[in-house]
Image (cartoon, rainbow, N blue to C red; front, side, top):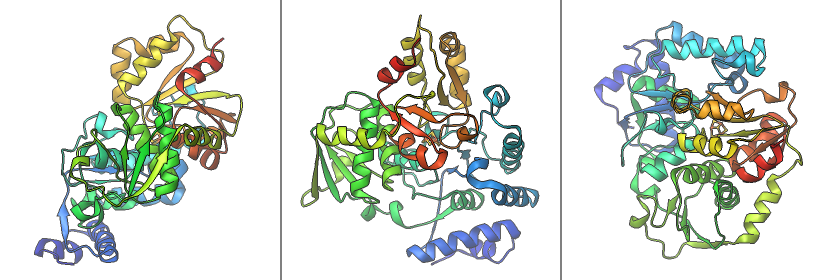
Length: 395
Ligand code: F3S
C-alpha cells in the first residue's frame, strides 16, 4: 500500500507509541483487503463501549492508551455504554458493573471523544454528508450512514474505528469504492409494511438471505427515517448488511443497474414467518423500545399513546442523553413517567446487563433487539408492534 511521508513517520513511531500501534493496525487491515492507500476521514463512531461487551481486557486497553496520551484527530462519537450514566442506581444497574463502566467512559473522555453515547450519532450532531468518507463501527449506524445518507464507511470494529479516529485515516477498500456499492439482490416487497416492527421483520428476513451482500428493495412505497433505521439495523444483525438501496427513497438507488440481479420476493407469509421465528416468549416482564436509539419523534409517539393511561409493568424507551434532554423540555419524559414508563438515556437493551436485573422476557419492536436478546442477554423475546406491546403492558 502506498504511504505518504507523514504516514511513514506514523508507522515508524515518530508520533509516539499509541499512534504507531493504531496505524499499524490500519495498515494491516489495508493489506489484508487490498487497499491502495489511506484516505482521510471526516468522522468516526466508536463501538465497544459497554463493559458487558469488552470486559476487563477492553477496560485495561483503553485506560492504557488514554494514559499514554491517545487523542482522536477528527470528530469522534461514542456508542452506548451498558447503563444510564446518570440514573443507573435508581434503575437497578449493579454497582460493580457501574464502577467499571464509569472508568471506561473516563478513558474515552481523556481521548477527546464526544461523549454522545448513542448508536444514532447522525441524530445528535455527527451527520456526514453524501459521499463523505468516514470510519464508523456499530452496524446499524454503518448501515444508516451508507444507505440513507450515502456516506462511505466499511463495517468497522471497535478497535479499527478507534485507530481511524486516532490517525484520522482509513484504508481505501470495500464500501469506500464505487464498484463495491452495487447491489447483488433485487428484493421485491409485496407485503404491506404497516409499522416500524414490520420493517424490522423485513430486515431480519432479508439479512438472513443476502448475508453480507447488498440488497436493492423495490416496492417500499414510503419509509421514514425511523423505519429505515429499523430496517438497516435488523439486516445488519441477521446478516452483515452494511449498505442497502431502496428504489425512490435512498440516494444512490437511481444510479444502480438492477438488470440480472437475483430476485427475491417478500410477501405477507415471509413477514409472518419472521415474526414467528423471533418470538420466543409469551408475556414480557418489561418492554424496551429504542433499538436503534429512539428519535424525538418516536418518544413523542410513545408519550401520546400513553396519555391518560397507566402501565402495569415497566416500559423503557432508550435514547441518547441529548434527545432525552429535548424530550424532557417538551414535557414528553414527564408524560411517559406519569404513565409508569421511563426514558432511559445512554444505554440500550442489548448492551446492558438486564439478565442480572431480574428480567427473563423482554418485549421489543426492533428486529435487531429481538435477534440479539436471546444470545447476548439470555432473554426470551416478545417481538410485536408498538401498539400490541403497549396493550399487553397496560393496567
Ligand atoms: Fe443501538 Fe443497542 Fe440496538 S446499540 S442498534 S440500541 S442493540
